[in-house]
Length: 176
Image (cartoon, rainbow, N blue to C red; front, top):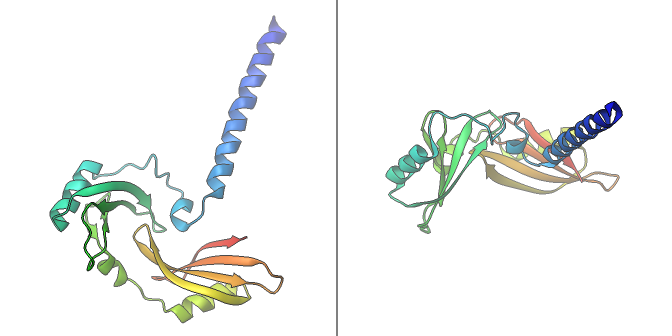
């Protein structure tokens, strides 16, 4: 009887450890600087509710909110990414609402924070992954612009490096 009890406990512990390992593995496979932030997006506490953020976004843009999700950027800021039903050809169809302050962040305000040139980003990436730059693209995620740089090293390995367009720091390095 005692042996049966220990067997059940052992199986339970093995199951818990297996699930924890699987969760860690899945989490480590996520790419991009927003996913790497140590704050769990799922459990992030916010001062501004999703409903309040939707109201702020609607009032700011006079549009109907279609979809919202919370993201955490490399600075640790929690932001609601807001997408709208209505689109026009002259503006972007999403904004961000700071989940702690309620401040609105538009593409225009984010672009004002770009301080790093494409050439500076390229130099920073090549310091981390020497090789030949095959492609460089300015992209945006979680309310921040970054340069996505594809490098092919001498050994033929592809490396993807993300460089902050605000600070020039390496946000992510991915060896394929």
